[in-house]
Amino acid sequence: MLAAGGTRAAVGYGSTACLAASSSMPYLTKLLLFIFCLVLLVESRKHRRRRWTSQPEVQKASHIYKKNHDVTKTRKGKTEQLLRVDDHDFTMRPAFGGPAIPVGVDVQVESLDSISEVDMDFTMTLYLRHYWKDERLSFPSTTNKSMTFDGRLVKKIWVPDVFFVHSKRSFIHDTTTDNIMLRVFPDGHVLYSMRITVTAMCNMDFSRFPLDSQTCSLELESYAYTDEDLMLYWKNGNESLKTDEKISLSQFLIQKFHTTSRLAFYSSTGWYNRLYINFTLRRHIFFFLLQTYFPATLMVMLSWVSFWIDRRAVPARVSLGITTVLTMSTIITGVNASMPRVSYIKAVDIYLWVSFVFVFLSVLEYAAVNYLTTVQERKERKLREKFPCTCGIPHSKTMMLDGNYSESDANSLAGYTRSQMVPEEEKQEKMVVHLAMSNASNSSRKRGLKGHVGLRIIQNTHAIDKYSRLIFPGTYIFFNLIYWSVFS
Image 1: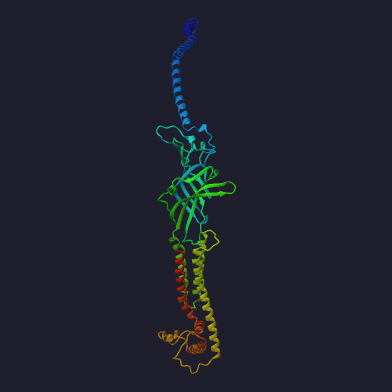
Image 2 (image 1 turned 120 degrees about the vertical axis):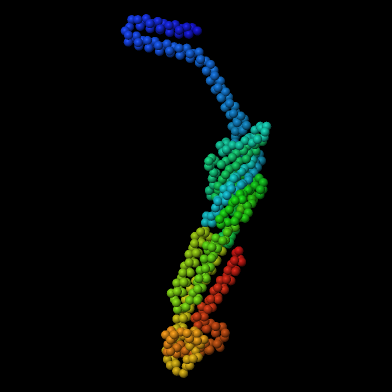
């Protein structure tokens, strides 16, 4: 009140002073003084209004602040009371110094992304879940409902240190946030789930490739805790492994998923529980039939065409043989380029190399035919020089055009014109050769049937092609029967 009275007195005194001063000053000075007095009066009134209203606003603001502060404090205290994260040392496992803590594991396979024969590995995406009990995380609850957290709480509590044995690469998915879930139950039971993609080694046996089946394993194990501290086990046996029905691979048929477990020993650290996710894959053969087996078979059959080509057509038969050999080499190189460099023979190698041998033998067959033809022509030339006279030889009995044609062959040429027929002088010379070689053939019959057949083949080079037309296809068909009965 005294302050208010003093303020009013000051204001009244100021107003009186202004009025007194205004009476003795010029007009402009009076105007400025009047404005100054008016501003002083307005400010004094604002000061009085702020003084009387400031105390309730302060009380109201302090009440709101106190209410908000209490709510925040209550929530924070409730969370700390439920989990008591700061009250325990979570660097040590539950029941430290006591028996081994059991940690159950189950896995749901989301996808089997790829199988690499060259790198001998596979890539899998899965949901890995751990189950254990930590009484330090128990909290009172009337509804017995669990509490769910994301990956931020995982860094503050103890979790099993499970890793993938023989893994090459692995990571936890982090889109749009870390794919980690932690669920805590009132009695202290914990569910810890992660979504992981892992690339692990798979020891493959390609001795029956591409008619093979491969068995790969994904192995889980605790890194630091031996079986005396942590007992790792499948939570529900084989039912602990779930797979998506839509899982499929382009080259493999997934036959079976199953789980196993055993102890692994390390000489420097001890025994550890190890869990296995085993799956069996059978390779689809149709792709390799189209890309490897059918082309190789066609090349072998194409090499047989040369047996029906005239042996005098050297460019045709040589080019056909070289083409088939080079094509087989290309097929073999292409297959081996997509395979690891193993030191043993694969099933596809057997088929391709046997096919290559058949193609190569067809080239050697023509080389033998051409050589024997040259030798035979040389002998005929010598006989012509030795027997220049052909008197007394009947022309109607036998006619040999190249040492290979009989009387029936000569009759088949009746439709040809005279210009296409062999001259009379050459006929006589061929008949001399035929008689001379027939005498040699008659003398060889005394040596037995085996020697007779061999000599006839040598003497008649055209017969080599005839026998090859039967021997090559028959042998190749027999090989295919044995091959597919053994490996299929």
